[in-house]
Amino acid sequence: MLSTGSVTAGRLNLPPSLLFRSPPRRDGLTSLIRLDPDRFERRGRHNKLRIGNFITFSGSPGIWGPAATNSALLAVSEINRRGGILGREIELSFYDSGGPVEEVVARARDALDFDDIDVVMGSHISAVRLGLRRLTRGRIPYVYTPVYEGGERTPGVMAIGETPHSQTRPAIHWLAENKGARRWYLIGSDYVWPWQSHLQTKTYITEAGGQVVGEEFVPVGDDDHEAHLARIRAARPDVVLVSLIGTDSITFNRAFGESGLAATTLRLAGAVDETVLLGIGADNTENLYSASGYFNCIGSAANDAFMSLYTARFGADAPPVGSVGQSNYEGLCFLKAAAERAGSLALRPLAAAGRNIVYSAARGDVAIRHGRAGMAIHLAAADGLDFRIIRTF
Image (cartoon, rainbow, N blue to C red; front, side):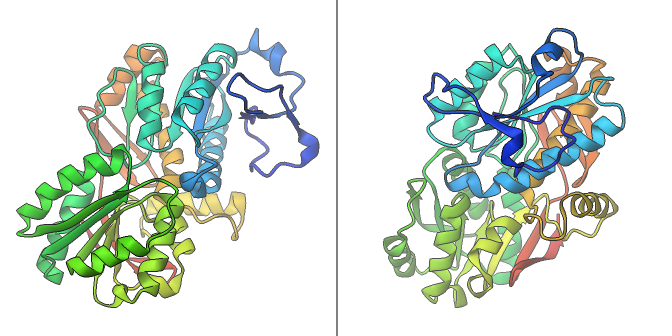
């Protein structure tokens, strides 16, 4: 855990003199926390809102950690500057949500039992969410921020990310109508988000007059794609739907471009944002499309304001912020709006308010209806190391 206090210091890359390592926790890991001599005294008397932010800093999804951290810190700074949430200043702590799910759950159990957090928030893979929700259910509010497979109904869990119906369905229809896409090959990481998303995607492909000519799931962390590319080449798809996560998506898309397939075969990705695009490299992004509720090139007043704040706070060379990273900013904006509507941060009234609400952040207005987030979805084409918006649904 890295405790940022009231988060006035900014980035994760703090000088070593400000950090110390705590004794090993029961999961065998050593936590990293900010040296704060007043921390334990404050626990007995302060009215701060302690939020435990579970961000992935390790493994394949760890590539999003820096931008996610910056986005959360920026939101806390802005919200605290305006008086906090219901008058309570946010105190933010970071926990790594990478590694085996059981280790992440143990980390979260310690956070609830010993760190006295009031809210769990996070951008991590859905497999982690399934583990954490068993722990938080009926006990503490849990805001889950990134794109996911949909269908989250656990009491107290509030998911605000894009789902396949709003994100992937319109992109499939657009590619069918404008690019003649009929034959689809689906490849994803071997866990719940790709499994469930592909089930829905197959329906949308059929709706658009297409067919699935192949599908496979790849173990998380597998970066040898030669056999996958051989099967794709043999299947002769018009489009490959890529549901690989983090660095796995980077290595696959690099290999895809280097194999020559990019010149003849389209790719549609649900988790390729600016961070991943930078890793893929400009030479390997030909005919690559991505659908998302957020790109940092969106020309809107809401995004212009967010990007100005992000650049002013972290500099022009800060980690590029994309959908997954920025979702941590969205999560805190959503929490503030839901708490103000409920007039409370208690689990039941907060969760009830969060199921039907409209809030505004970098994505513009987002309407949560019956627990499902609705927002503008943008289809973008990769253009070197940038995205170019070609259609908004």
